[in-house]
Image (cartoon, helix red, strand yellow):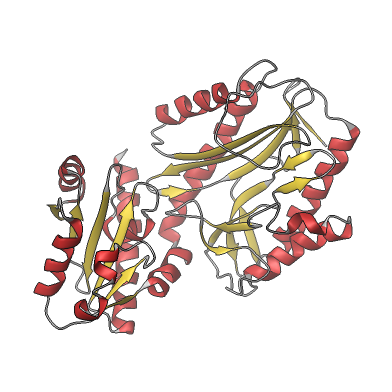
Length: 379
């Protein structure tokens, strides 16, 4: 990382810590216990600016800004000391070390998050430890991005675009899906991207979603869908795109047009103050217009978008029963990804920044299907 990159990380981290301390002051919380592992590290990373690779950890963040990081892997503890300069403790017994730390603190109010992942050994003694659920406090901070955080999301979005260019060039008839993944991962490692959440779908009507690669061979006429989610300095951005091996059929063009309309409708609905439910309804109503309403249910699709930042899949989830309001500077992805009965599973979506009057799209990739034969977009 360049010195400019390190300075940007420091600026984002300082802004986060200032917000966290103010939120704790307003909630009258003395300490915050944050759990993290290799996959779900955003709560802990928000306060410590450390990403776990092996094992799991707990961080005790104090209202004065001091932090004690407990890690159950000795190599991770050594790396954390070098990277953070914080007080780091290698704890073979993570729960026991955390209990001792909390009990030494005396009679004070402590919250924990994400509460559903906090080790049961702590939760079952929540009363004795004066431990409460601090999820709402930090979830709001994770959703509402600072301007300093946007720089990292923008860089990740640019690398998502570049990664998809690699993906398109790699997607040729006769190749296996994992060969495409390998080329993208090589590119990202060379660019300093250490994490990339990616899933893929290859085929036709039989394909109901996206998964890790399974060795499926690309053939003429296949739809190839993917979700790319590179991470830069702890922050993720995502794009979802669909391509056709060879020239798309008229049915594929027509079906994909529904997804273009749905994405446009969802993006037009986005602005500060509207709810996630309103954005989801705008997308889903397009499918209902075409008699495809059953395919926006949980039987065929999970969400119509979601928050993104220090985790690839944060709140708010864009669903018709989620009343969380969007706020200016929030980063989300809008994606009407679902199964289409005529051609199979299709995807299309971009990471955006919510603005007072609309949104800013961070991807420069066209909202179209692609033909890999000619490497040109298809209207």
